Length: 194
Image (tube, rainbow, N blue to C red; front, side, top):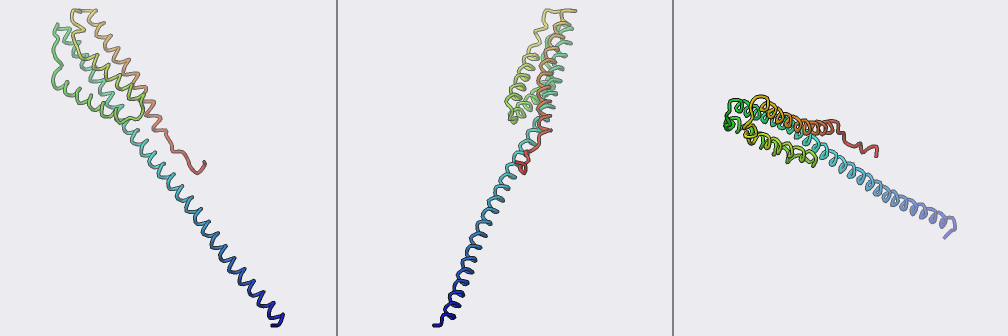
């Protein structure tokens, strides 16, 4: 074989080998690039799913806190009504049961408050609402705290009970308002800036 032919065969073989090697390397690099792209897309989707779940959770908490705020306000109003009823009865020297209609309304409200309270994730809120619920029960349970009082003494005693209710409501209302504002102002973390 002639050396010129041999060198052309070697050059052609080297060119073919280089082309085949380049093709194989390009395929390997493309596969790696596809895997990196797929991994980034999967991580982004997972992050988006977490963000959506977190946003939904905050929306549920916000709605629950708003409903709880309304229910606690109704509880304070109903307890105030019970205290006023007892006070008016005591002025007449009577100590009767709260009318069934109002009693049923208080019971339904108490159930609503408990139901909403159990849905709140914040331990501080649950504790404060539970404390307020206990206070309203204590304040409105026995009208006999007015028995034996008349005139100014009766008025002072009734006013003191109403003051206790207002203080208890003010504490829980302030906390609920703070937590509602936190939920309203909550924004998801921007994962693109991490």
